Image (cartoon, rainbow, N blue to C red; front, side, top):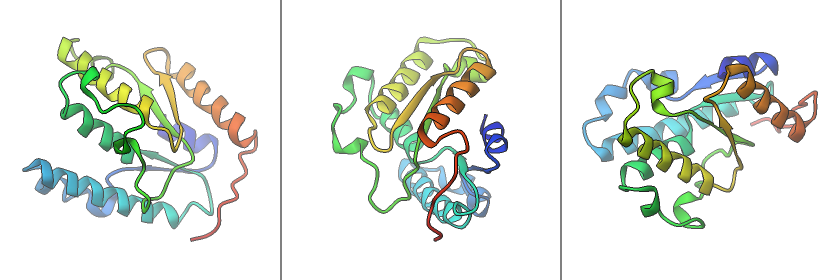
Amino acid sequence: MLRRLAQTYQGYALQNPPRCLAQLKNGFFGTKFERKAYLSLCNYAMAFDIQSVWHLHPVFLSSYYYDHLSFNIAWGHDRPEDLPPAGSNIYSWPGDLLVPDLVVLLNAHRSIRNRIATTKDNYLFQRKIVTSFERFLDPPVLMVNATNFFEDSFYKIKNHIQKIWGYTMSVNVPPP
């Protein structure tokens, strides 16, 4: 999906962690604190990479701040009902991190994405992820049911982008 959107809008497709930190990934996953530190570092390095190209073309990024935050929120609570309430500061974007214009959640159950058997635990975990994304307000989140065909999901995202930025998606971003 990421590559297809980038091709459609002649943009860049980037994935987090950035290349400069990808080889360090295994060294940071010993403790929860190390994992959070690594992911935070990746987000800020990614923001730096984006700022070097966004004035040229649109940037489409996989796995940024909301992805990491929702995962940590989901792991820290047993049930969706136990999550922090809507409006809690935990759902706020950090003031010093580059903010995307739009966040898209491709909502497909893990068993569909990974082609593994469905379990109650997977369903509850995914529900906590989705609930977290529903509570993020700024930047906005487009929720896309990705359990259907790829083309349906792609066109929903494309139509939303066109509605926001117009059919040409001209980019008026100041250079870094």
